[in-house]
Length: 239
Image 1 (cartoon, rainbow, N blue to C red):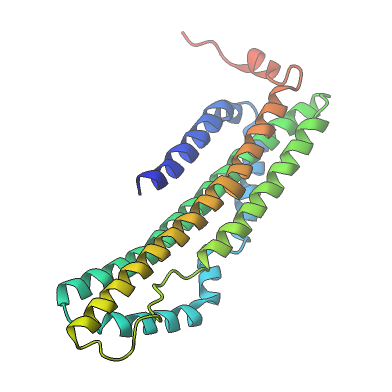
Image 2: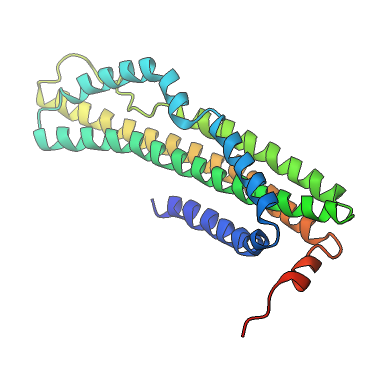
């Protein structure tokens, strides 16, 4: 869990960094910037969301949960049984929490990219060469779209302990119970490794690519000669 928290910290820091850099642009030409921001929000709303992806796997997930529940119900120690059931639920909730977090980050990246596009449009209207900036913006849009697809695919995955290796008989004997507990522990260990591997791959792959693409678009915007000249002449002097 401590490692996974780095996902949120790093991603949030990137969003704050980007937001702090581009937020001042909104005062320069609010109509153009807001239009681009609204366009990106609208595009995000038409993208398949996390819930839709999970619904497609609902039947399969329910069957897996049913089988796992039956095996966990064979644990005679009620304390251990309850702990195992709670742990199984936590694994699924963890995947849901992080995929929704990733999708929310992508929404924010899209809004930031909309602001960058708004500033590029303003610069283009002033005769600036925005070819490189527009190319970087398009690349960022593609990276965000790819990340959304990857997040939706991750959200559709089911993380239920596979206890099929546990013997279906003789679980009422002390040795049978011992074997069942052993199999349950091994199943949770494998499940944890699988979940964390998938989440880390998503964080370090498509999510990182999307964040970097937005940063590259911001850098390309900043490389436009005189892109901030309008702010120097239009910003009122405070007393």
